Image (tube, rainbow, N blue to C red; front, side):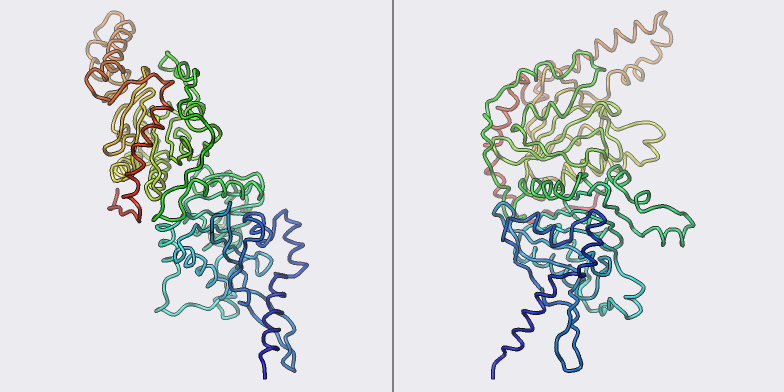
Amino acid sequence: MSWKDEAEQIRRRRELAKGQGGPDGIARQHAKGRMTVRERIDGLVDGGSFEEQGETAGQAEFDEAGNLTGFQPANYILGFGKLDGRRVIVGGEDFTLRGGSPNAAGLRKSVFAEDMAIRYRVPLVRFLEGGGGSVAGASGKGLSFSPVYDRPRFKSLADAMAAVPVAAAACGPVAGFPAARLAASHFSVMVKDTAQVLVAGPAVVERALGVAMTKEELGGHQVHLKNGTVDNLAKDEADAFAQIRRFLSYMPQNVWELPPVAKTGDDPARADEALLEIIPRDRRKPYDGRKLVQHVVDLGSFFELGRRFGPGQIVGLARMDGRPVGVIAADCRFSAGAMTAHGSQKVRRFVDLCDTFHLPVLSFVDEPGFMIGPDAEQAGTIRYGTALVLAVMQSRVPWVSIVVRKSFGVAAAAHYGPEGLVLAWPSAEMGALPVEGGVAIAFARQLADAEDPDTLRAELEAKLASANGAFPRGEQFNVHDLIDPRETRARLCAWLDWVAPLLEDQKGPTGYSIRP
């Protein structure tokens, strides 16, 4: 007596599972310009590194004699893999089966992917395509409800976010629970033209609200890049894989480890002459904040996140002499870089990312203050802005702030970490209010009575701008040092060497109090 027949049945089930939704289902997927989930996994991980888990989950079919005739696999695929030699957990819905809407085994496998990432302390990558529950499932034809004593499936989402880097790609239509999984990630990317993200699809929206819209109109990239639901846009699925790889290259495996150092060959003492001229002497003239950052960080290492959400703020990951860092800067072409409600949410999320994964923060300060006006008030700017300031104050990672231009108002506090190093360029201005607004308030009567108010205003603004300038601040030790802009890279690389030992004490999960 042996178990040969049963062993053969296991082999046969695995073979059938790799057929996914069958040739027709795969052909339909390709006809829509989308890869299958197995093709995505193969495109992401190092060749030959994928070790699938739960291959035999699904529904077997037998003939009257008890012979296995077919097998419909669970419509979620997951397993171990490697990215550039580093271990990850990767999983995703199989849209060729039930349009990605989970069956019972598929749902359990998706939760198990999060459990595995937490248990083995490795990053989690999700490929998302499909919907949540269905009426068919609720009526007993598909997904079964969990008993009340079962662990809530959302707990694994929260636990994973606190323990390991989570990256997610929306590759096709993503609705319901998968859409929540997309949002519950540290980095999300959306494939142009093929992906939409929806709480509910067009049929549900039209039935409930009487509004007829396409999936693209409801939840295309033009919607979710601007509202911050998704960080980045990928031109195709291969680009999404590349962005996930790049994001994870800056991340530690988990919160109990430090980010990996990878030498780039860029001289830490490099001093770009262009930094002497990048800030215009005309205080009202904009400059390119991204070029400023790229002149300082390791060449080619800046990876921006969320460019179209809160566009006045620039955030991203980079390396300095090979060390991963978080970078915050301003795009003063948008409302002079003033901190908006969206900008506050964007920077707060980024600060939390850096704090969670032990990335020192480099803040290139050019802050005129919180955005003002009726739109800003209606957006709740002060609430989101205050939450950002408190997030910065509660952060543990080392900060260095380089004042390159303006530093005014309460919003300026969002750019200086607790016990952080503060350096200033000759172009720096610091004060309670921008000069223009301060003069308008403090000298309102004199300006109203003046024979030539424009001339008086210009004189007052020039006088106050001089008092708020870099040299008076340096003389009073309001900043730790004034530096030649060309020295910035060398100074920051040296500072990172000093703070590196401090990061050892910050390993482990973070803890935050309630913020407004």
